[in-house]
Image (tube, rainbow, N blue to C red; front, side, top):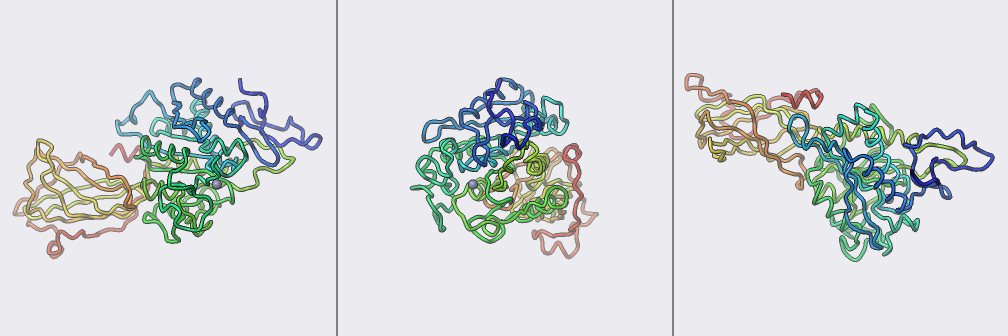
Length: 454
Ligand SMILES: [Zn+2]
């Protein structure tokens, strides 16, 4: 049983609003209470809630102690997935998503959105919600709801050392006008623990959302610079999708959309971890005095955006899908689609002999987001044999920090004998090994399960 206080999320003014109007069921209840003009959940109430979730849902919830705050309060991380399956049903690794909230202890609705994100998938699983089941069978959600429990319980932006935790990360720390960034990058227990968690559990994540309040806006990198991030196509594509189908919430580069800031978890998540990162700012109107509003209704539009970002995480990187490889004495031709929303550069095609040794590596090629490329490489040093195999080696995104992936190909090359002619593209072959961009056709986005069945 949860604590009695705060069973209904409301701002109750006696005589103005009948409490009976509150429609939230017990499963939807915020484990905190309204204080003044905002919502408040203590660290103690959160601790009860996350332990209840883990105890009651061992099939999908693991509770991790990610370290302590400066005052020794545990930083809880929920790991939510269908833990009966180590991988997706098709044997491939699950997608990984990181969510945190509560950097600023007085931004309760941001903390609430992190809480609601965890709750949506836990409750949805128990209700058999098909969208949720599909997500949890293919994805690990890692959610740290309250990063600054000391500041939260004192109702202050800062941590107990009066440091702004969202200026304390090791990405261009203290290199722009800012207040209270701490004595050094990761000087604070909370940010050090968060980066430790990120570098231990979510290095392969393809989405990081960090939740705040302020103005109603979603911010993508950079805060440090006004320029667009290297993977601008990915961020702009998400912006356009959200605006076309879900919400009018502004989505901008953080430096332009808010103000220059540095040492933030967002810029660290993208610039150092290489993960597509968003700051989700709910607005300051935490709720209207005199109204009774369930949290899931108050944040319904924000949750719609979160569900879109989570359900489509498969697309938030480059996804190279080889159509065809042709080999002649002099050249190798690769026909490849990028099914993801991010571009990749510095990709190579590699040939492995029958023992699995890489014996040939192509020159570098690039494939733009949702585009196709035909690349022709010099094959002079290739010793092709039919019992060998092929693999791709490339970065998931353009940002330097992005993860590299090695993907074995289940495709047999077509071998052209001399009678077929040694060069695939007469004339173009002269420019080999330059990558030749042949088509810019946008590939329609198929469902990821169809794609992975290919
Ligand atoms: Zn904030």
